Length: 285
Image 1 (cartoon, helix red, strand yellow):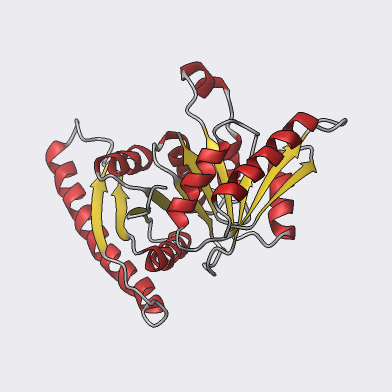
Image 2: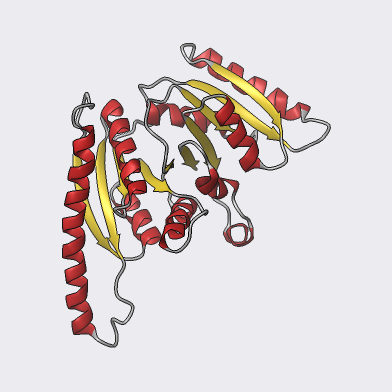
């Protein structure tokens, strides 16, 4: 199992990203991972026309961002200081660039194990809608796992994990990888498959039973159950399930599609990144 050692937390100084930071710090406190906090400063678009003025403006914006980042960290770390059993090592970084590309490049260049970021969803306008779009973009492009924290989600440990399966051969491996990321929390695991067929899907049920036995033979301390639920849309079915079963973390697996698939295929995992009601962990291959 891969151990969680480095977490990247992009922030935009909103309360939503502050909530994601607090979640990341509390998770890191239990897993003893380090945290890198970054803010992305978008460069001026008229750099070719007024290079000197743009350079000065960019420098000023970077200095302002640095000051805001320090105050942001002080505010949210103060809220947690008396509740942490272990204070994780925390570093900061400012990046000049576009959010999605910069976040994914930082994760690649710094051997990040997990990106944790907030998402408000798509029920807002303007810059607040962009936050949801950035979360979707990072989920789609990042090579490492991404955890999306809804703005009202609070860290209360991870005692129950729901893994949404499409009954792929890779699912047991992805669940095993997830155990490594959230060790030593040892949550109960619910493996759920949403069935869109009116007559049911016996083959999927057989595969899920086989998956359950696989883990029971190898991880006896872990309590695993399987659930085969009917549904018309994946988002509603999964959100209804996690609400009903008090899930602390929803896990989905996103395979890397080819160019034409990425161009025409709307990923369920990307959709869930702005619709989920609980923290969503997206595993990558």
